[in-house]
Amino acid sequence: MKLELGNIFIKDVVFSDETKVVNGVLHVNKEAIQKALMDSDPRLAKVDIDLAKPGDEVRIIPVKDVIEPRVKVSGEGGVFPGFISKVNTVGTGRTHVLKGAAVVTTGAIVGFQEGIIDMSGEGAQYTPFSKTLNIVLTCEPVEGLPRHEHEEVVRLAGLRAAAMIGEAGRNVEPDEIKTYETLPLFESVKKYPDLPRVAYVYQLQSQGLLHDTYVYGVDAKKILPTFMYPTETMDGAIVSGNCVSACDKNPTYVHENNPIIEDLYERHGKDYNFVGVIITNENVTLADKERSSNYTAKLVEYLGLDAVIINEEGFGNPDTDLIMNCKKISEKGVKTVLVTDEYAGRDGQSQSLADVDKTADAVVSVGNANVIVHLPPMKKVIGHPEAANVIAGGFDGALSSDGSITVELQAITASTLEVGFGNLAAKGY
Image (cartoon, rainbow, N blue to C red; front, side):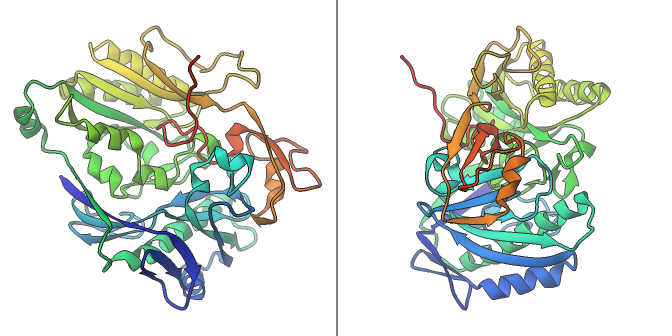
């Protein structure tokens, strides 16, 4: 598969009477988008739209999802297949990307594991979405809606808005075109016979009870591990619908821009042969964990891989999936590298993962999510600030009377993403 991503660099976003891109400025017709969202789903009681830009004294809480606006201009399928478009296979042709812009969804809390984005101050240092030009949807559902429907309403509103805004880039000449290509397996091996074969084992959060991720519209807990072209994941095939702790929940934006995939492509054909992505799920029962990890190891063996990168999404229960995959793949004689964050306690002295094994001897840590951070008050809060008292990483009294918030790092959106999409780095001495 060959995919061209045409990046249109967005320098600013403003409200306007038409949604369009002019000289790098994204104009958004607020009223038209509000009406379209309300008309598309009777379960929405109200939608407000605000803009939040880097450096603004603005807080967004609780954050449900972040989505990059895109439009499919050629090739099979369309944006967010299974939700906005039909389920045609994506990953080919050209997709135009409004790079630097993001749709952020908030509103009444769906699940307790939702997060905070501060556009300035201490909190802005920890979330990559303090640097994006954010179109924020505050979505309030009708009263009495069950929580799983509440989540669906907000998820669909975000995807619909991102698709509508993405259309503004359809006829715009991109500032940059990046091309990514993965050949069918036998062709790939023939082209690079002397390079080690490497794949990415992509664990998707799928524990249920609002801990869900979708692949072509299918809840990932219903799938067996399967093989995908990397360009499919880069082209919107995977959508976030989960409410795991905000620090290590992969928003849809991150599935669209997974840095592990981008980095693997960077050295593909030079240092190794990046043959593709194995997506797998994170389950609750032991039997399901055994089944998925067995199947993943079987795929690794069948593909004749020399090495894999494995990441998890979430912590605690998913640590077991991570270690099971690591152990079983290592037993096939395949080298593994794990990417995870840590929950090592506020003092850093506790065991970092809920499960361990001696085969996990090459591990990349993206930070300790238990670290305490103090967030100053903001001039404007979009959403519901009282959520700080109940979200994961917060506590009763986290929100002070002056509007400041004290929370663990796990409450900040995308602060310790286990794909390396974040701002934290290790410092050597």
